[in-house]
Length: 478
Image (cartoon, rainbow, N blue to C red; front, top):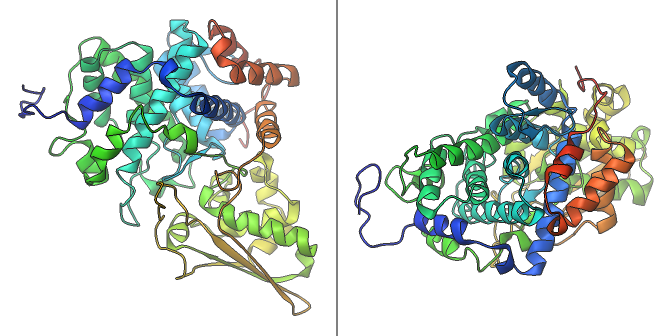
């Protein structure tokens, strides 16, 4: 049998074929209830964060561009009160979903699922599918993304690709293919098309281009699936073929086969979600937790602090790279800023990164007292336990006080992951904080109720209408 580029596959079932078969044949009834419950929770969090991010400058700029293009109005734009084409809605909502950097992380690598909720909503609304179908597509996309991401778990520190727009592109494609009911062969083609769209460089962290990566992943998935549906061609063995996706992005590690074979058996969504307690780079969260613990235990105030020393892994130090921030996006990846703001406010919320907050002189004076360095006792790169969980994002925060005392606290598992989970009440409060940036309190509660009971929703169009909102806001930070 020949693939679309003419290379011989023989009789071996390849990764692409196995993934496509799972996508085409997966049904919600085969997903155990704990995994479905986890998916409903993760999807609710993703939508809430996207609503909150819709007023950020990156999403507002993108919304202006999309409005000007006046594409076919088939899918709603979260928080902006208008519709556009499915690919454009996926793109714009994807940017919003990642703009706050508040979206959940995956256990092994950042936020590769950031574009997934925008992708499924962009197609589910014009198709008029049920909540069950939307949830099934979300789970399919999550599982495919998770299995592919696990193939890159051993990549060396310094890898430049951003998983949100590389692996995320293929996961969004799987979800879109599931909603469009593509055959296994069409799904393989869609994955081949999408692989050439995958991109995203980590050097753009701290700029608006980081959330753009989530928008690209969502749009790529929708577009690739739509093209494959219409007969567009692509390499149907793209994951495993020489110079294909896995060799390019993951080094084609031997573990790849095992993880793909687990599709439909071991559910990534069940243990794979690390919710974010703070809207900033996740690798800084252990240090934030430590700083807040010291604040509470010792009654720390800025005027009592002489110096702050933060020890992290070298991987964290390579990603949280900014000093005194010059923009809101830089502030989210500035260890000095997030520690100082946490100590000043006693928490970190979306408004902690607004124009006024990042220019607050008390916060900036304290940020200048923060020094971050790599602790050789911490593994250089994210280490996995036997169950495939990332276990080394620890941090130690040591504060020297003006009276000569020194206090210190170490955190191994930041708030939000399976080891230190957020409560249902905390997740609900997070959703409301984000959603009420663009929705009324009543609409936010109704949206959350529908998302929590998604399997009982006969048609998602009413929910999509609700999520559009009736905005009177102006572009945040512009």
